[in-house]
Amino acid sequence: MTGAAGFIGSHLCAQLLAAGDTVIGIDALTEFYDPLRKRRNLAEALRCPAFSFHPVDVLDPPLDALLDGVEVVYHLAGQPGVRPSWGREFALYTSRNVLATQRLLEAVRDHPLRKFVHASSSSVYGDAHSFPTPETACPRPVSPYGVTKLAAEQLCELYRTTYGLPTASLRLFSVYGPRQRPDMAFARLFAAASGGPRFPLYGDGGQTRDFTYVRDVVAAMRDAACSRFTGIANLGGGRPVSMRQAIAAVERIAGPVALDRRPAPPGDARHTGADITVAAREFAFRPRTRLEDGLAAMAEHAAREDAERPNGALNTGIRTPGTGIGGGRRE
Image 1 (cartoon, rainbow, N blue to C red):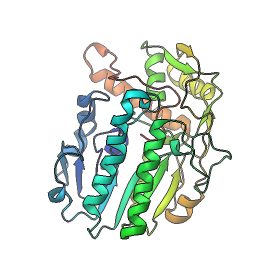
Image 2: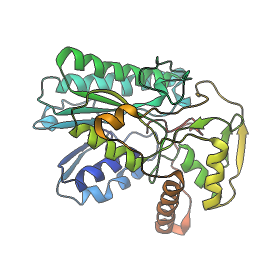
Image 3: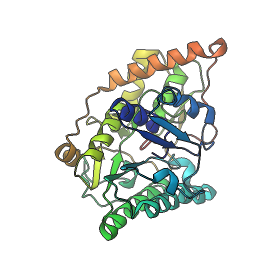
Image 4: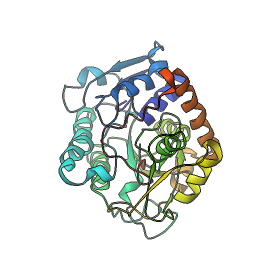
């Protein structure tokens, strides 16, 4: 698994280990946010004999030794974030989202894999013309990040049709839950409610997202790997909510959120919503977690982390320009 120490990757490690799988985790531990936070994400997995971790970059070493005997590849590594993908950072996004995917596909194309599961993003849709949006909708990314995710997805399709590699690209919609990246919307909302930096609210707050609980996502990833499905499928929460509704939900749990109102930036889709018919039919996907329950789990996890931190200090861990509601489409 690539991206094993990240938000979604660490939850997928736990899901696979609980199911009795042997897991080889790869993560470059980049500094998009604090690498020590990523290492903490794997604390439980590292205590399991069935898990091994390798802090390497997919772009650097030959991967043959790590891939030997592997049945399923979960490719979650990449450079996240919609707003930082503009300008000079685009080279980093093309390297970590496009070139890294091509390198990994090339490394496994002759392996007898059961499945290559790629974490794609709802950002490939951009401003979709219909909601809920089906996989047949024409992709129209409105950010460089979305362009690179679409390119990586198309590489998976190319290797599937040309070499018969059994790839499944799962378009993730606004994933949230415990251990969420510190630049993402709900992590920032809870931080703002706890006395941290004000939450950057872009636009009028009427933009909507299809929030998807992380444990529903990782369960679906393993189900997709165990199924006969190949191709592209949406994974969404099934009930888009507006930013104003999301703020109100956090305030009911954690108290008032201090806001920093800003103009809507380029690259943010106004609305997202997933048609999950394909995932439901092909590998029985069904989002099970209500937003309120998922946020409660986030709050409980954050409280445990704060209790373990010296003097209860807040630690956002943000190293780069972050995001508000637009963040967290994939990761």
